[in-house]
Structures are given as C-alpha cells and as structure tokens.
Length: 212
Image (cartoon, rainbow, N blue to C red; front, side, top):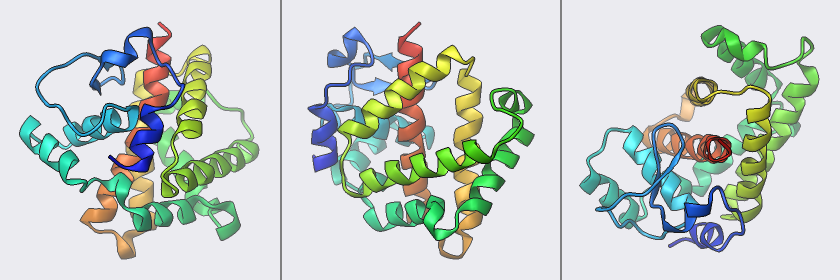
C-alpha cells in the first residue's frame, strides 16, 4: 500500500462509528459494509479508489486487479501535478475556475442558489483549496486533506447541499479539467482526474451523509 493509503488508514478522521469495519463507499457516498473483494489496504483512500473504479462499471474481479496492481490514478504524480497546476491561481487558473462554475450552474441551476451573487471571493477560495488538496495528493499525504474535506462535507450539509449537487459537481469538474487539458488528455490523465475528483467529492458526501 502507498504512503498515502497508509496515512489515511492511520488517520484520526471518523466519518461514522462503523467506519472501522467497512470496505467501500456506495454510489451515494454512504459508508457500507461489503464482502468479497478484499482490495489492497483498508483505508479511506482505498475505499474511494474502489468506488471510483466501480463508477467505470468494472466487474469486482477487475476492480480488485486494478487496485492490487497499483495502476490507479491516485498514484500518478505527474497527472496530479497537471491537475494541480491547472487550478493554481499563481499559474493563471481564473478562466478554468470561472468556466467550471458557469458549466455547473448551467447543468444544475439549483446549485447557483448555494452561492452569493458575487462569485469572485468564492472562485478564489475554491482555486486555493483545490491547489492545496491536489498538492497534498501529489505528496501522497492524506490525513489533513481527508479531515478538511470531511468537515467541509458536514458544514455544507447545513447549507442545503444535496447528493445531486455532489453528482453534478463531480461530473462538471472532470469535464472542465478535460477541456482545459485537452492537448495532453489521454486515458491515464482521465483516470487520474476521475480518481482525484471522486476522492475529494466522495469524502465530502460521505461525511455529510454520515451526519444524518
């Protein structure tokens, strides 16, 4: 298991009391017990990796093979750096961030009501947060990002964020990365973007759902 996987396994974040005995996060981000596939590691990162592969409609056997081979996008540091640089305000990410919110609000009009009329501060905050999160993934560190995302998920539930909002946000963020990085987009980068975004969104929605 990678250092990042071990860091999550040893982390102090508790999304629910039963988190010690679960193996995956279901399609709505909720923690579930399951048997069968005993994939590498038992940490939150590995559970999110399993969930990310399941989204690709792989069979359980294929899921296990991918995880145990180490060929998952969260191990691709070059790909993670590309995603981080794309959202880094210091590298001119304003247009990408603006495009993301425009697309998200067009796809899910109810998401617009969650934010203030003036989006400048929100866009800046989001860019900085994403840059930090992806930098931590590049460094294969997970404890602080998972704690941050879990608290964010719990906080956002109080503001009326729903599971649909997480679904549309995830799809829109991945498609925005793809259009921005189209010149270098390939299967590997697509996998890395999917897995990184699925991890970020999955922790938030899992923590929010565990509060119910």
